[in-house]
Amino acid sequence: MEFPRPRRFSLLDHFLYAFCWLTFLAVVLLAASLHPAACGFGTHTQLHLPPCGFYETFHKPCPSCGMTTAFASIMHGRFIQAFNDQPAGVAVFLAALAAWFYLPYAWIKRRPFDAIFELKAFLPVVLTLIVLILGVWIWRMIH
Image (cartoon, rainbow, N blue to C red):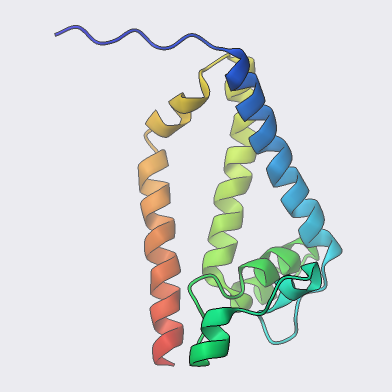
C-alpha cells in the first residue's frame, strides 16, 4: 500500500497561519479591553451584540454562556473568577493558547496548515473540549 505524498507548502498556508495567529491575538486583545460581567456572563454585550437568545427564552444558560466573560477575566488576571464564570472557557482559552504557540513553529518548519489536524493531540483535545462544554452546560441546566 502506497501512501499519498504530503502536500507542498503553499501561499495559502502562509495566509492560514497568519490569519489564525493574528485572530487569536485580536481575540485576547479584545478580551483585555472588556470588563468581565459581575454575573458571570453577558460580557459580549459590550461589543454591541444582543443578549443570549437561549437565556432570554429559557432563563437557563446556553453551552457558551460565560465564554467571553471567562476570556475577559483571564486577561484581567482573575483566573479563579474565569473558572467560576465558565470552566470550559478556561479550557478553550488554554487550548487556543497552546495552538497559538505551536503555529509559528509549524509555520517556520513549513508544514502544510492542514497537518495540524493530523497531530496526535488534535482529536483528543477537541473531543475533550466538546465533552467539557456539554458537561458544564448540563451541570448548569440541572442546578
